[in-house]
Length: 95
Image 1 (cartoon, rainbow, N blue to C red):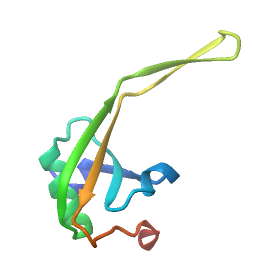
Image 2: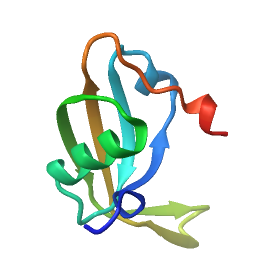
Image 3: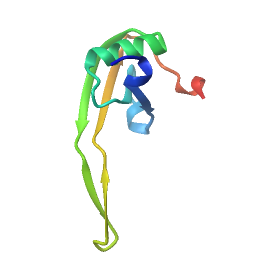
Image 4: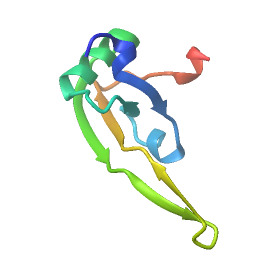
């Protein structure tokens, strides 16, 4: 991967993803590796990363209505990043 902006697509901010301390979830590029995600988070947010877990969700087909419309969701790759104790990322500061 070339830059931080290519690796990190967007943060995932839900009740479940922000309920745990020192763990933050990001939607990442499908080609990104754990080392790419670690470097990107460290460069962009200026925090120390302890661990990165990656979850790859496959493409999903969803039927809407009584079988009339089928839509596909693209494959999704998420990274769950664990930070050092006492550090956090404030997503409200970037709005």
